[in-house]
Image (tube, rainbow, N blue to C red):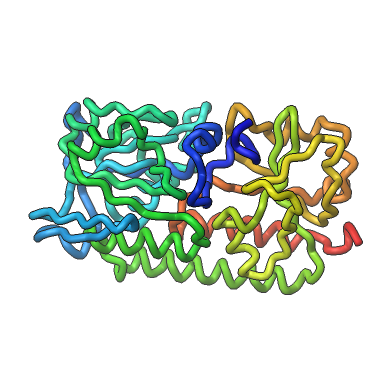
Length: 350
């Protein structure tokens, strides 16, 4: 495969990443948030905001200045960005990118968004209905980027999309969780979100508390080695923590996340016979639902998996790589992982 790592690694952080690598990594972040029921032209947005009118002036993370006579009210956002805006109290009217799981529930990327209250202009990578997007009469499009790749904005349609409305881009390249949240907070504030609202302040406090609890859990388990793993029928993939904002943050909090020795970005790929290459007390397994990613239930049937010390000890947790970069969504992940760490033994491997 062109991408020298896991074929569906979505959270790209290399500025030099090629478009083809991204296409092979067709999974992204979070799904979107928008308001009450939408008609063919989209519903009327509602926001919990400190500013609801007046001019809008904002320079996005590409250095592009956006100047509008009025504060954008009709926002269409890429799924992961929309989910974060939603948690900041903003209500986009449209969304594109992953939204639902096969069972009809929100994709993890969608966070707490009410998907029945928004218009979708596309779901899969490369799928963006420009005509429907234009019919929503958007004031602004919001997406993020890793390297130079705009998330779920087809390169061949970008110029047409930008003719409809300006685009504000949040750059997530090289950012750990707090940095990514702050980047979105900056945009949300410019769009009128009240970051001093009790709900936002409580969410931030809970995130900080959850971070501290994980830090204490890691300190209480010195020597605990954590390996982050994904797989498919051909290979096992060991995640490179420096390439993923969430894993980088876990290391900042003191968790010993194993760093593979491979030179490929994002993941080191090995055969199933080499799955024991890196000893670990605790394994965090990729929970993403992708056609090219094996679910844990399938992995558990593999003989070499069953022989791993962490597996024998029952120390397998979840790696929720698709979690949106909002206080609320990240707090839930940190709390779950803290519980996993608290239950784990640090003496499973030497």
